[in-house]
Length: 188
Image (cartoon, rainbow, N blue to C red; front, side, top):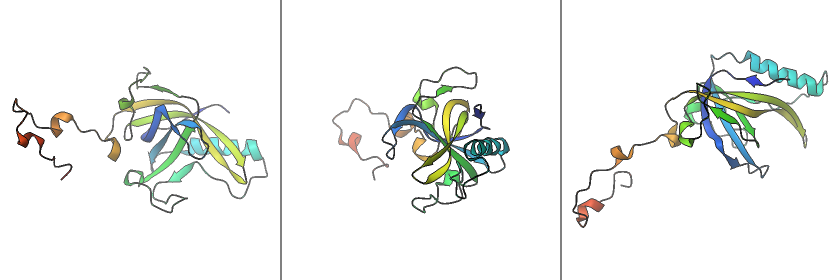
């Protein structure tokens, strides 16, 4: 099966230029969630997943399969907690790989600066669906191959950047003036 290219969605939990330790596998992985508005046509992704299932199990499809497409209005399977607000109204996928993906901008120029790719920007990705059967757990995972940032978006919570010019007052030459060392509103 060839790689599948997703529709445009919002990135979340982006580890695309530097990997993150996967606690379960103990391996460093590149990954991102991609959030799609529930109106987005995911029929081609679903078809690619079905083709992968047929290649792996044929007519003996397992009764219980973990799907890579999750409902952002649902709850996290391990904790039962709801997904973050940015996930509401969306379907999402988690893509990962131990190999570093290619990451480019809308003009297909390489992105090298981590601050350019963040939770809330719009991306699309090329993926490779893969069927797994490990320790009784069966399902489909999506290997991340490449990512294209399509455009900027409103950064999600922890990724929201505040300009230092907007956060600090100008300090004059009175360096010993105690007023220069008052707690900011962020701490108070």
